[in-house]
Length: 197
Image (tube, rainbow, N blue to C red; front, top):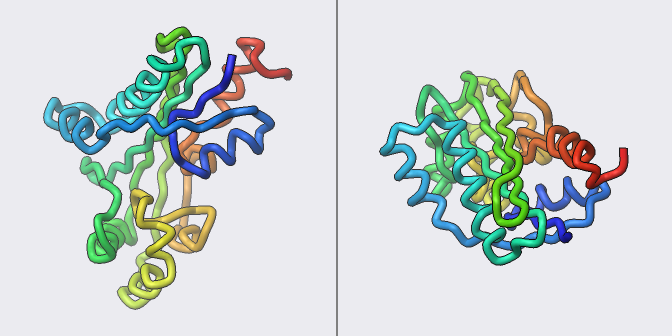
């Protein structure tokens, strides 16, 4: 049985491989924006949206690779009941950072495992992040230096890079913030006897 990550995220693949797992990554090619909008229109909660999108990605690959273990992941940023999307351009990123500065937002990171083309395990973890009350000039300089790296990052930051400087407090584990609740996944794989403990 192969272990497939239904994602093109380099950091998620790196985390799994660093943990000693032999895993391959395959792009699920799902229309996340349309699915997210439909879920929002139905009144779905942010954590449920993250879970649904993670399952959608896993299912898409599992239908083509039913004999393999497929992992789908997704992350949703929630602030004051609003879900943020990835910034469309630097101006959008600036507006997002201005809304988040000096305040606390949540990240909901979901993971869903498929085996025999059926969902067999899921987990949603939450982290809370509080930003410094950033100055306009720092936000502009930060975006100038980091736009190419953060353009696909919801919230306009990567904690593994300069984005860590934006925060005054963080509650939740590092893996959840990176979009992959790794510790619960490893525990589940160990319980199933799929990895040694």
